[in-house]
Image 1 (cartoon, protein in one colour):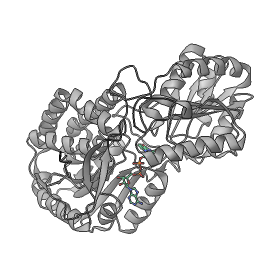
Image 2: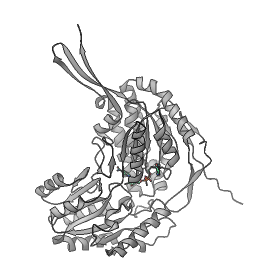
Image 3: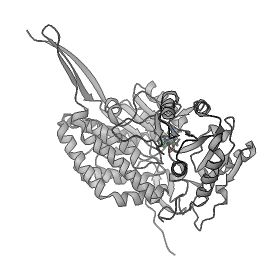
Image 4: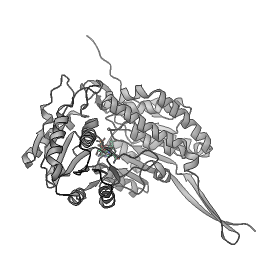
Length: 485
Ligand code: NAD
């Protein structure tokens, strides 16, 4: 008899791999094949407390470590991440399912946040103004908060954790990461490379788990701030519970991103752009384009090209470079998506490309690119985040209609206009309600030196991740007014 051994993952606390105290586990399958990769422990409050204690012990010395020295360790980390790019991308494809090209893109976007974090001596600098009154000077000084926690989603196993801990740690905080239980393997690699860079023990800790581990973080008195990225209902819970426990919280939530297509756009580039934004990473991106509002004048021509190009997309294992659409994360998510497609049909939208027809040789959780035309805003497929390669197209009379319709969404993460007119682009920028806006840019995800966050139900909090917002979130200020006799 052949016995197969599947690894039970461990937590990483105080610089060591340790077993979770919980015997409960969840399987981690490869979404492309359904094959079991590992079992992830569902850690509880005891494990969280151990990790928080380790972070709390490491904090005083880490906070006292001069800022340039902290930065130097991040340079080393940056170098190791760059050297490991290919391997990291392969792990992402294996546990998340996105194509290797998308995974390499994610690795790059994650690395860019570490680049940002290396410039903390500049970013953390305070302000000073001499002579604010006769013989009196004023200044602002920035300090770390203490122990900070991060809770991350499955869809960017590398980029989203890197939105959090490098900057928090560069600012002098110590960190507890609760990665997604659906993509826990890459998180372990990030922690291993972190310690290979020479960071002191306890500065970064990783606890695997789900709901119970999260609630342990939200309630822990030692934790000063929580960064969360995930779905809207959970983001709301994190924000409400975390703030009720006196913590600073930033909770980036779900989305339904819209593109407005104008008659004066570059049609070919617009079609390619919408396809990349709607079906790349199987639509499992918080910045995926899930609704297109196309102006009637160009709608038929646009739809014809969009449908023709979409039909060419190959679906299958993300390791093969010819595949554009990889699997969805889990079988239950696939069932939910199939249900949404059936709902769209029942609601009366025209199903022009049906991803349910997709045939692959593999056992994974595949749904092909799907396009609905003549969608209306009272339909569920227009309103809900489906988080899959399912695109809804609405037809509008003009730019104003497109903007008004988009602004009816509960969500307001990203929005894009495709146009050849500066005037249209300017009107769009001024009138659209979205945190991140693109003009002829397919996925307007800001670079790491700008902040990243949406509006409305896409974000709970005040300060976004990354950029100056990130530094402000992870630091507190003292304002000094001084006179010397
Ligand atoms: P999710 O909300 O299911 O999980 C996110 C994290 O919350 C995980 O670590 C999970 O363990 C934890 N969690 C889940 N249910 C919980 C509960 N009931 N109580 C406490 N903790 C819980 O999200 P996901 O499915 O992993 O990720 C996809 C979602 O994340 C999408 O909605 C997507 O739009 C969103 N997202 C948003 C952004 C952004 O920048 N706004 C970026 C990436 C992903």
